[in-house]
Image (tube, rainbow, N blue to C red; front, side):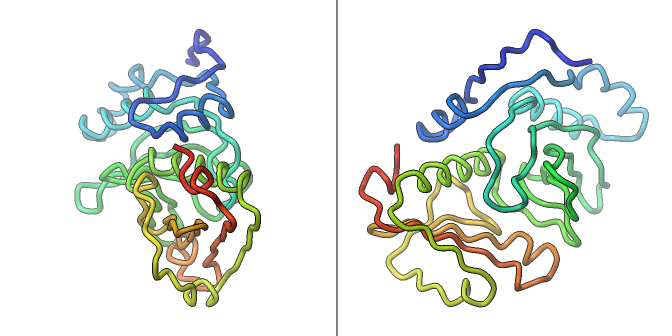
Length: 220
């Protein structure tokens, strides 16, 4: 049953950067969401391990009902962060949903065995090491898009030709398949998730944000 007492004004979870907290609290909404604890016994009867149920419940309590602006790739990402029954096995690992897509997609959004945020395409592909990383990446895209003097988008083999000498990975986004890189006056976001998940190199994407000052580069 949805919790009607939840405020529409979200409070950013602990552990996010100042930039991501501002993004969540200024641009997000917290909508009613299910209390998964009421499903615990039914899930146990289905053979879902108690530890996996605990992970799903913890995700729902931290992120459940949080609606954020669309991501620039993956057709916008989940409409609302929301989970359901874990699925998997001891041999292959357990995952649970991270939220339904905004449109019909060839992949879903999942939370992996180690808490990774990723897509379930032809292959399970972790994008960020945590949901925090996904939210940090959304916040950085919003920030960079506002402050950059130029924004360039490239795809396919051109992404592999990018020269990242002098760039450092942005640690907050906890990049795995996807990552952000910070240079002296620019930021680069590289999206490899669909290229890996569908074994489709032409799906490689990168966004280059140029002309950034110190505040534009960090925003924290």
